[in-house]
Image (cartoon, rainbow, N blue to C red; front, side, top):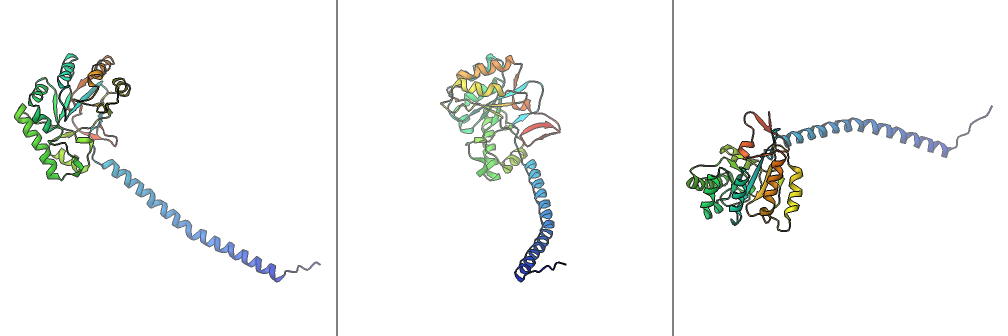
Length: 268
């Protein structure tokens, strides 16, 4: 019969290893519930963040339509030398557009404001002074819009119902305040970026034309550097593809609607 002899050193090592294993098991068992518990709040927080994002106030960037209607919008805040050409071009192709005007521009060019209105185009409120709207109080926001519309009403006899924020800047306060005043807020989902002098007419067309789709809103500027070169081709190409230009108020859906997280207005 063989007798197993265990040295003191071997016994100490075995006991140490066994103790380490026991401690490891205890730690695993104690942390496992915590990890499971931690994952639940993380998932819950993610859901809350998603819901919060869905509730963010958004303007209309485009409209969910399937009738080939699109909107051409023209912001006017600075020079005026190209406005006659724009109006002539729109008349030539029987296009109705929305002009978002600034108050100081309208004050300087009242005759052009009346021409735009008399030609059947929609006038939109682009504020009186072109400020950064996110930096304004509710009272200041209201003052900007009311001051502009008081001026437009003196020129055309009518007030506006469409609004676009300068620089495309907005927050929840801006959107809710403006809508409470009776305006709808519009952005755009196709930007010509025609205020950059280095952009050629062909570059603008190559950017804009492939993006055309039902319900899109196109942004142009009355002082766009290449607008005389690109605007006729843009209109001709869109019309050849079956698109019809309407104002943003005509593009907008009526009735019970929602604006999704991408700024697309849809039927609820």
